[in-house]
Image (cartoon, rainbow over all chains, first blue to last red; front, side, top):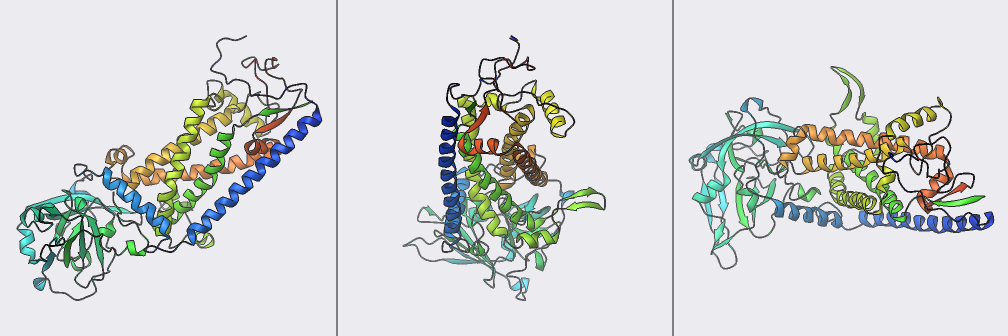
Length: 270
Length: 240
């Protein structure tokens, strides 16, 4: 006997040696039958579950059970979310560009005429307020320069240098997200032509890396990249980086979101 | 004389057979996601030996234009994949099954002998209790790969909240490539696994469904010494 051997597994349980061959065969057959019937039923249940899932009525472009799971995942990640967790930043020299997405940019448009319309938070009982801002108003806020990774929901990513005002600085100077001592839950952003729209949790909007952005890679934003002002938030996929902001609204009801309506995750957070 | 040997506990059979459709659907939904940015290939410089994937593959398998669907399946089934995997690992630890699965210092030599035997270069397989060295290595590796998929997946799913993890894995782009590579690993594992199961035959396959395997009584019972297996003297063997 070799006592230096390892933690060798114990022998497998075995039926008694005296049992007749016929008895063993019969026991094997009945156990096999039972196991394969249970397995077959489980497989059928799986196929049934698959078909049930795919035939559920759609909730915003996807069968509702998927929407429920996406929203539960979103709530979980919002619960885990911390403002102090920052997206990694990179040297400005790594910045590149890749233009993608023109929805909401078709209308011709003169930057000088542009105004940012903000609908202040108006919970029941509070008066509706709308305030307009020029680009100069936004540029008057502290200037933030950061190079972060833009991640497209398609799976590619690039580093981009962004310059703009923190959304949180904007709200500090213009406290439009609060009323009667309460704070809005969500932010809605819409292009001037209302063709593209996104929603964010207010907690994500006031993250220090969420910018109202007016410069990209050292140049003022051009048309295809969302001139004169776009949203930048490295906490979300590129689909949330709305270009050419027309209206911002602070609300309690989850705002409509262009890609969420096509079956994508509303949260789309990182 | 025949006897029944209890090979696979009921729990392990359930974990195994639940994992099969779950992992298959994870790979399928992963491919729907991958289609939207299908940048990986095998090759060097401008030479491409194989592109993941040629257009015909997407067409044949219907993988095009289903990014949202792919993400929705992936981010629902990920929970089942993780829970089933954790229950499996937990069960092997609590039940002692890990003793059958974890490779030991003999396993690597044994794996080599098994490989030579399977390739027809050597007669006779090393005697084993339940799994040979090659199996121990493969079944432990695939569990580690599962953990790898969980971590690389988390790194690309929430790269800001888990920025430390994403950074540890070499950044977002690398984590995505690693996540994909592990998937290629599962497919390779699957191909070898299926070939070996076919080769091992019905008696072995049935044991993963019904739990038992029929052995000839010539095979030593517990406590009888196995000739030619000095390092494992008190173990019965299963037929190949």
